[in-house]
Length: 297
Length: 225
Ligand code: FES
Ligand code: FES
Image (cartoon, rainbow over all chains, first blue to last red; front, side, top):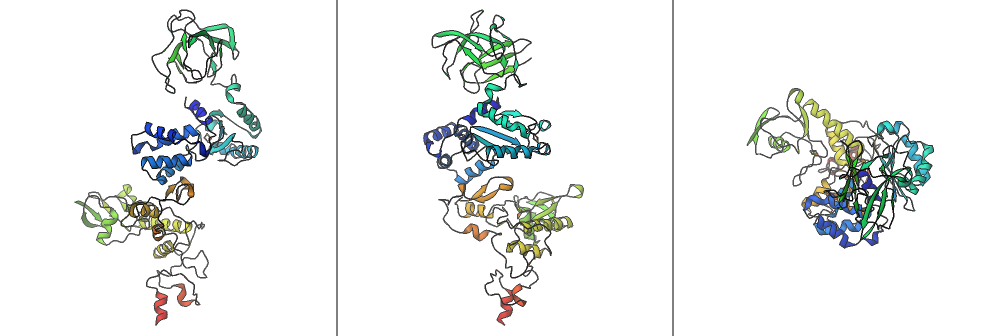
């Protein structure tokens, strides 16, 4: 899930120095009022909000917490997670660890630098790409590894790079399906009546979809989800605005399929479905929230 | 009170005393670079290493940060300590060969030649200025930034700090920015003038604009007569 969160956090940027609202920073500070220990948490929230740590924001934090600016600056520059410069829309992380290095990572990085005409650590002028290097991602056997917007690419060669960058510009959520091993079809059924939700008549991503009845704001209709675990493609019969919490019912027994738990990301109720072969999958009922989890037994 | 032995001499000190303080109390010299009375100990330069423990469990620790413990056996000048100290000095000298303080320490420890590539850094990251600014000047205008090989000392965002009162305490205390008098010797030479009382200005031709920090200066004393 961490991976998804990263992607989301990297997309919300492109603020310039000026549109920092002191109120927002104060709000973040209020949420972490436990005192001195919460600096990193505060900085984390600012970084997620703006995509980087604006100087003005750090000055506000220093003023409000009575902490010297140099301490805050020290922490902000110590951790690689924090950035003092706005990042591009897409984050490219190329591994230059030992294993990747001997498998030709420097050439991959050089190629990336050339195609984007930036140096590692910089952002392209159009604010599309930020290129960073890391020292080992823990996937050495797959090296050279390049991570773009949270998607891992293994055994990257110089000749692949153009293609990867083009794909990144388009966005990965559309493409990957079918080639990515982390995406696989599942068949799910109702927790109450145990009937399968499989909708043979309607396919998404080339697989029969998961058909559910949905209701928002008094409107009712059919919602079909992709049965590929990891794909977010959906088809709805009526317009569901982004961010709305949808209540789902089983098309067979009409019982509501909600779960007691809440989405750890957005707080909306999770809905749970049984997975054929054992286990359950829980997805967030908020339109646009991509939280999902699979518990296999 | 805590009892310990330093170079086989028994001494009892109060709880919380560091090995360095105990050794100095007994009169054993331990060279230091990043330690200064009135500032907290930081343990950055490692020059003050001493050996504690016995047999295979003996280890080197920095005496300026290590508190004395009951029954501890400390050696301040064992072969291992001297070797380590010399190496530390050589490395410090390689990063800041122009620093008078480091040159003096090096020649005092019998280093006669520089083996490593000279970097001419302007900072050894001893943190004295940071502590000076924070603890004595109550300002906190400068601090450490970044990490690893990019670590540096300076103001946030590299702009003039509004807290800084230009007191100059950081420059006063800095061991790296006191330049040594190179005279016309090659950069790589180790001056040693102060250690063996042969400052370059004594027997070499007159060099008026030389900065000299020796106090009292042997050359000047000789010339006076
Ligand atoms: S060296 Fe690249 S993943 Fe380990
Ligand atoms: S004086 Fe002890 S480490 Fe520098």
